[in-house]
Image (spheres, helix red, strand yellow):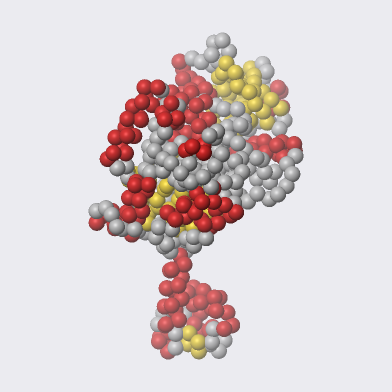
Length: 498
Ligand SMILES: [Fe+2]
């Protein structure tokens, strides 16, 4: 007999004889005692079994909202903007200070007393220019001052030069190098980055996470046939036996914003709308989302086409328009960006998911030399890696619409996620960076002539599926044969105009 059972008996609780003979785990008895408190006057095997069953049920499919933004009404002041940059510097500097290369950093004001010395420092890029010899000149600022950092262009430091060439204004970096006159010649640039030792976390059970993006319910180019095929699969009505078997094990589904097409998002959008009222668009969305089995936890964030304010962080769509979605019991609405944890049990920490619609992605596709030359918006993998390395979803001020919050920088990637899931650029991609799965979640709209004119090649009607036990991804393509031909033709036209 364990000591927990013994103390129950001493307290006067009636314990069935079989429990006295058996070895019952003390911690389990303690959990039961804590749960029932003084109302526990009798304990037998049945009570223990029911308690364990209930506990397993609660642990299954666990979803915790780790971070979501709700916009407290307040007046913004100039000081809020100052605080944003101070916060940014302090938060990222504290990540950088854990790096071995940056042990013993010097504040910038002290550099003038250190001629011809090896130094390391942390600063925010206030300005970036090129000399006529293509050397890169940075103005690096910390709370004590500003220093000029020079990165020469020569064959011996190509890697460093390429890294510096991709640097953006307002990002916070570490620099090591040698002082000379009033400047520092850099020999290394250090990003806050994802720690090298981050493990690729694997879950205890074969369960699946499904990623959807940019459904745009209400547009006249919604891919209804394709979406219906997806709904048939997730309800185990379509697909091979193996595929149906996987559908049965789907436990979580995320939708990364642009749930609806919205109204008044761009001039004369009216002509492209199948449903012209925003509330009716959300009702249409709810009609489809309700068809996803109710045991699947659905996490939805918002996008630039959705109702509500445009500036990030965006709170979830207002109930006033989207009540139909809020009413679905297995739907959880979070802000953009937002963090959730899924699958946590007593013995497993769960997976951290960072959901971001992706307002800043296009800026980095267009403005980072290495990304632009590798394909721009077609390289969502490189854009997402760039942001993870900076530990910020919009390192340059102005790369996305942003409304500062004095207390917290919601675009900071302070918690290293296991999954970083975006949408917005309508490409379907999955890749991995230092144990973080990076997913851009396709879309459910046909490619429009306007997208073709802009040289874009969306990859619509794809579903990303992740086996949480192995972390193996799979992209399921729901394009019908005729849609596939149409999309191929559009892609050809876009390539010609690119
Ligand atoms: Fe979209």
